[in-house]
Length: 193
Image (cartoon, rainbow, N blue to C red; front, side, top):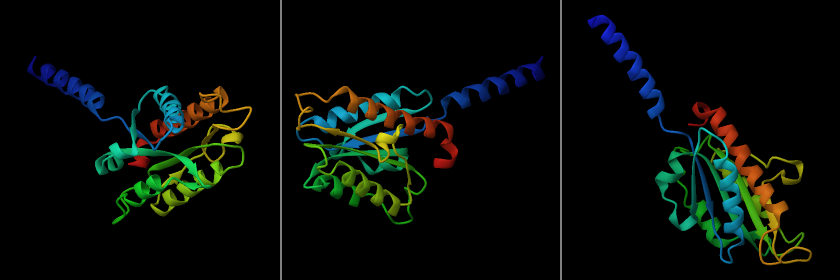
């Protein structure tokens, strides 16, 4: 009976230890002045949250701590377009990431952006953020579909878009980006940590 009790305790302990392990974290960090980039960030978060087996953190860049970055298996960053460039606050945020010893190496990285018009720089902004992530040794990921190859983007101020809320087509791209990153994190957590 004692041996049986020990075996049962061991099996129960194994079961509980596997449930108590931390889930891989998808960190979504964004900067938004008008609320448009925040809306796209929420769509990215919803997509990531739709995948079981991951924890999702949605934070503005001023809320992100170094431990948030280090604990994340994936970091998705969003920026509005500033004269075809990343918003200065977002570039400052990326420049502040820990670099010594490359602690972000092998984490997934992805990007999303919002811009006032068609061809105003959304892709340039995403590519600039992805380039920075590559310097940190991250593995970059694009969106779910070919029309979101560099991440998710939205047009916010040029007809026929820009009627106050983000169009559904852009929210779907955000959802797809979050979903794709979370699927990869859930499938390969040990590789990314």
